[in-house]
Length: 316
Image (cartoon, rainbow, N blue to C red; front, side):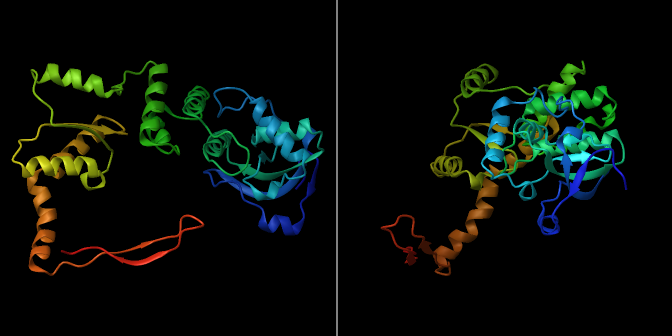
């Protein structure tokens, strides 16, 4: 097939080991090529970025190219469409232009439509690899999402599902979704940032000055047995007969529905009944002399250190 740009075929041995572009809906990898840099269609207004090209990133890429250490086949490649449009790899193209290189290693790909091109551009910028690349910030994803909505590349009705697919933490996804909705004028149930002192003051007001025995944060989906400080504090007080009053903030929730699910789970896991059901079998086995044993093995962590094999712990 004839393409509207100059290119050279890549070496067969490199084509066999070249890192493929990321898989994305509506995109099909055709082959690796060396594309003529001057024929690449670009405007450097990357829709997946909040701000324009970063000069420091370009300088680093230029240094790698200049030193002879640039290996295009070793990293997820810049991507061009069959029309010669650069879909990903803007910083690397600028680096090649800056070093006056005639050709650049790219992946030639076919796209179903503009929406597929946009999806790949957003996806590629979210994934961190070992090459000099600026991974998408929350601001980048907010900007690209607003761009996609404005250009009809994202449907408003699919906004929440679209954001859920981002390679970000649950709290980052929530921040992105809230900001996009806010900018669109959509009413949101905004998440509150709650420092410890704010929680303390608000609880004192809401509870008419009741004392707090435990105040802690716990991650979304985490359980009390992964939080030794909370568990130890709780068990110590319960054994002493204290009626424990705890204030728990759940981190990284997506929305109020998710938060309430976590609260219901913690209501169960923080109960004496639940703790008893977990701990009683161990206590019974220990008292009956049927409990197992624990043997520790410590790796060599300093040059002057050595492996410690078969270190016995006490069962007495």
